[in-house]
Length: 163
Image 1 (cartoon, rainbow, N blue to C red):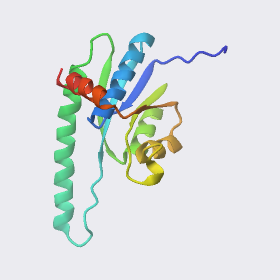
Image 2: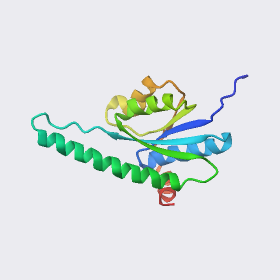
Image 3: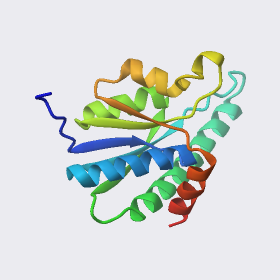
Image 4: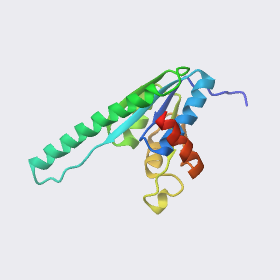
């Protein structure tokens, strides 16, 4: 094969689960080999308040603000724990992950989007998770799906998370 992929910027979708930390580990190993930078992206999902009161809208806004603040702190801590050999930045976006992740990857001119594949909410999602499936249908860059960790891998991911 004459064409060899070149990865200079890798976007990783992070939800702080063991599966997403395993996806990050794969992305970091690839980034180190390719001398690529890594962009960690966490998406705070929109909370849809019931339509019947302005109080519920205010509550939804407070919850989103709180979730965003927590996510920013968590992503910053995760960035600090990564090896200095790879340039890593963190981002927190709001919206639907399956829309925001491919959109960010395209805007960032990423060469690869890496996601954990964990969704099992519907029978159709067993082969590919619903967020991963929806992301794939919108993705303009190559997408690498990392399967959910087996129990022995989950322990290693948790150990890496603790630093």
